[in-house]
Image (cartoon, rainbow, N blue to C red; front, side, top):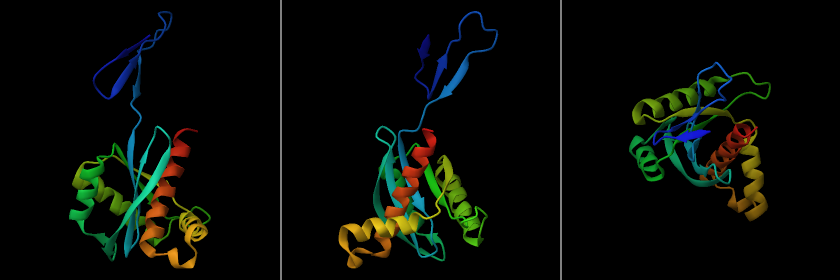
Length: 166
């Protein structure tokens, strides 16, 4: 038997022969924002869990990794995500590189400034995949930096959703 509450949790009652306390199931996020952190440009995408799909939104210019926080706030207020996924740039062997710490710092600032729930997602090869995706649809001229970053953010979101359902 499941009893629904108006909160973000559902309580699942276990059969009476169990001696454990009822389990809590945390509500899955439904709307997501993804960020592909970069020192000059930060790609942004939106996603939703119902279809496990993501769409590129835009790229926010950054100055040495620092975005215009008012622009970030506008995006967050417009899309009202349940969860923000920040790409984690790792080396191919899975080890961290200097930009990894900066991406983590960016994610932590999103959490601190906006009270957002943040998760990090391995983003290895997303930029290469984004370039391939865009090139197939528009050739070399379509490979604008902002478009690559926002498509990368969408790929990061889709990767996170895929791992969420596994």
